Length: 241
Length: 241
DNA sequence: CGTGGATTTGAGAGAAATCAAATCATGTGG
DNA sequence: CCACATGATTTGATTTCTCTCAAATCCACG
Image 1 (tube, rainbow over the protein chains, first blue to last red):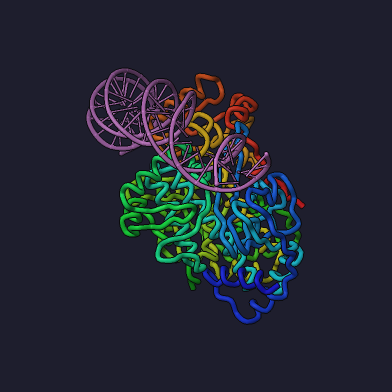
Image 2 (image 1 turned 90 degrees about the vertical axis):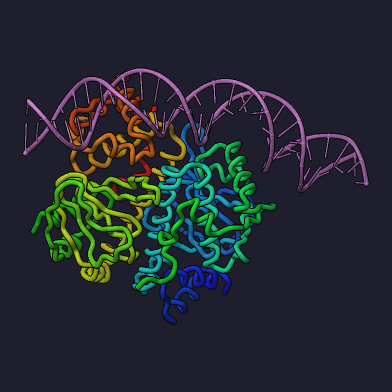
């Protein structure tokens, strides 16, 4: 199944330099395909996965539930990413992984991943780097919920998704598909669904964005960045030498 | 300088299994000592470090500033940790690193770290794992600021510090040194300094904690955990097989 | 003893949550 | 093709948590 390796390579190449040997090794990976519908749990908090899943098509949420029923989305994953790559070295899951949309996933055994990293230090570094970029995005999310109020917070999230999707070619003139509900967005931002709705209205009223059924468009990039205090550096796009 | 290797080994051993060869390799690392006073910037946002720093004594904050002067503490680092280990693979810093107290630091060149990881896959995994635990803690901080209100949020932070410090033997019957100001705590939690003060008073009034000059004590662990919804699983303490 | 930072207190304002209900899709089955 | 059910979005009113502003007190230190 070439598409799996292709998705992974495309995404890795956004932030890493891969040589022919690396690419060959990735093509050689044994990947088990799985198609899932929307809103399905892929991996559960507390379990011990023996494989990680490569997302090829669709969106995936990492989610953490609080004891009193609160729900926090920790990250939104896009094609080419491996949302539970951390389980390669953190044996017990500390959060859930679930599909947002119809998804095509490719499961790769941890043993195979370990072999590849042992044989190709450059790939090991690339995968490590991917988990570090995850971490950098987590850090910015802490800032987002901790420091920004609702309007810039929403703007920042949308800008991040725009920037990351642009990296893998999933934007068309500042528009991108993100088929999530307003409740989903509220779970990303730590806001109530009602307030999320009002914030989105405000952004539309200000002609900063447009939304129709899961298609978001940034109408005024520079004003949005200004509003959100957005600086893409934390995404570490482009292989830095 | 044995103390550097010792601090690192103690901390790594909390979450990893190290063999004699690993320990020997760590002792062989070339480490440059540096003593810093409190409130000193170790590494700045936007720079490209060529070494990472091992914290041996004291506390270090990772900090992110927003364009409008907001300050968010991203993590509090304790002895044995390498707060900027991510710079090994993410060349440009996306946040600041600064001392909180008097600190003893040991700087290790990235080249040396890379050599060690290339020669000892088990150490590579251990270091990768440390950065993944960082990530797990970031995730929980997102939940903390996103989902919990002020009182449980503060309780959660204190419980986390207690649990982590216990791992390296820096607690005495539920008490631990954490010489930070209330303003520091407010920057950790995304609260105002005034509200932080009121929250601390409330926790003391409820006989949940006591504080005197940088020494915090958890007076009622189970009620605190109940209040905070605290589950230590995300810290990944103990080497999971 | 004075100075500056840290903590504390009080009062008022503001951002966001909650509660409740209406409206708007969307998709299903008769 | 329409009636209906279900979930998503929207609106309005009210409450609550947290912030801001301003000032007082406390404390460590030179």
